[in-house]
Image (cartoon, rainbow, N blue to C red):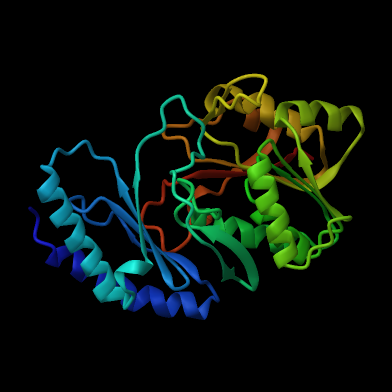
Length: 315
């Protein structure tokens, strides 16, 4: 078994810097440890007064007794450094998704609570689903959307729990549509809107398959000045007409979205598929800028956790 002291020391070093950094930037949810040491393959995220401890699947084989002892030491180190007790640590094992929906239930209920980020508030649940309700690695892009939103018409595609819309609406967007196919996540988005006093007449929630939505919105002549599209890498949801594969389908998605983008508008397109390659014809037709590196927040050691592009019409 690997000596736990290296893990504890790295946690302490990270915490010394990042706790001050998070307070300074008004962030209550942030990454404390990002698989810094290969022998400790965890992501440790702080959510207010709670810790989300994700163990990544490495394929390592341990005897059950040895594994439980090792995990107990990891939790003890996290508690020692953070000052939280073990009841505030939420443990989750994350395996690569193979032919399943991206957001699966864990079988546990957990507790809903909210955290603050740059003056906005978001409901999270650290137990019920594989993901928590807020993707921390998109914090920088959320803030950029908020900074650009004043006076704009905003569109959020594959919206999940609507966090980008919360930033757009509180940043002064005059109108928005938040599009997803999941009732669960659109209900979550509605709760996030209520938590931030967002006018649901001006900021509408739309349950739709994104491919169908793009066709119908274009036929209706809809136009938006600012768009975010963050599709899952893969989805075989029974609610969708077809299986989504972001590598195969991204040209169709981007072309469809660009038909809705007003002149001078901006599309932020992002995904976290490993090895994703943007089709080489897209920069020939649109103004495309890779902003991946600056879009990943300071608290993430893994700068390849997602890719992100800023796309507009060529002038």
